[in-house]
Length: 486
Image (cartoon, rainbow, N blue to C red; front, side):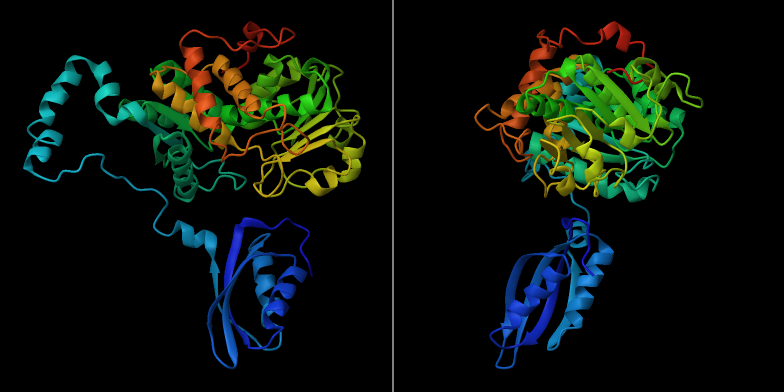
């Protein structure tokens, strides 16, 4: 049985196989894997003799169950002996993904005396006399804490701090690779808001910025707001603001492709948690025509009972017609669908009922809110959060450059003006000559992105402003929103 899910490099396996040595044996292997719905990405001959060939066959599968299915179908083939199966993702994580390395050689006694005692005492006293020198004379200058309580990890939910570590390690690796920023995972064995705030405040002297990660809403809103009040370094919740920046950048270019204006479009957002709320507020700041926010409770509307403070604010400031129906009904006639929620909520037929030249950002991972293959039959522009699909909307386009820029100028806070500037910088990296329905946002490996975002952030800190759409919701009105303001 062939899987209907999309294979991904995240579920890549390497299978060591001994197969009879004949002219068609290798072809039979690749055909079998293809018929099982996997994608062969490599095939290496390890050894051979007169009777057998040993190969390592690497393929992308859709999930662990699909990988097992591929292996079983190979085992069922005549003349095939599956000897070992390796999960390439687990192999990559063995021993963790990051390490600490020294910037100084410590080759002799003189160097040791300057890096440590007695010479280091002079540097300590200089900082004691002028604490601001910590940014110049310590790792604080280029270091970010990646803080999580493990309560909302990717799409996995509340799995706790130890299980969150691989994600936080990965985030630290991305900081270094794309922004030259030294980041370190700080996973906390508490989900108490007061304790988290107190712990982060206590460790803040060692860091030039705080990146909050995978903390469940609505607690994440309060934690961020309180830390911003307490600390003199930027506090940035990537699940909120990194996502919002990238979505605004992608939507800016998607609207250029379809020839529509921000103030004219109706947007439906599935997911009113941390990411969805930040997306909607940034779009409102840019003057979006109308938004319907949809969550597990339904379409947020005035008079809806049982809403928390954040959702109540959205209900009061969006959904002009006070729509209260289901998600498929909400997107009828809508220009844009943005999903930051759960897989398989919509079908291609639902997308067909959207407005002409519609835009679909289905970003649930690993499986989007609608199958992108079906969405592309009806929508003019389709984007996902997946690296194996066109138009990947990925936060790595934003946070390395945002922090690079803030650290470069010793910024004390992250602001909405920075978010707007970063989104514009990302959008503008895609030149007019390259812009088309399958290229609305740069690749995460485009070396121009981080410098462009960092330069935009520096300009804002130094006094430049990122102009908002004149039809936008005033900043003063957004400032009244509970605890999620930039």
